[in-house]
Image 1: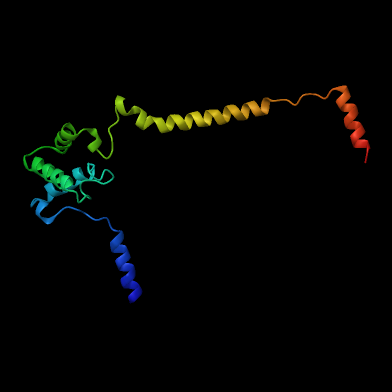
Image 2 (image 1 turned 30 degrees about the horizontal axis):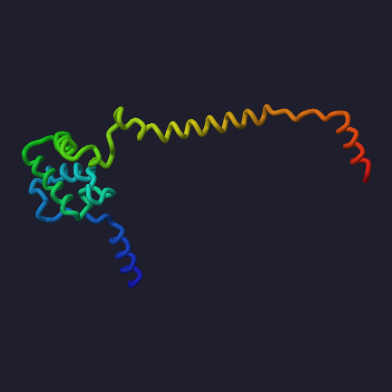
Length: 150
């Protein structure tokens, strides 16, 4: 029984903690679900590696309330995201958008991988094409002398 309680405590501790306070929850379950979906994709500007849904920072709370206010005003999910991005910049998005200004971020790892593979293929091809130079007559004579010494 004690082991079960310990395992249960470990399981509960591993669950993600939600920082949304009860006074922030919208009465409309559908709007609340939309708010959670939006806030899960927005970065806390204080914590930087957490969504505003997971952060306890006061700024994250303000952003959660802002998202809920915009939804209550009738904005679409995209309109709410656009409003927050216009106000705080693209850094607020946990998943950056793909565009010309972020192409290096998205395509850079694949380009480096392709360059690495091309380098390996080129190096292997050069290694296979390299021929060993032929021995001169003097070298052959010395080699025969060394082999006969046994």
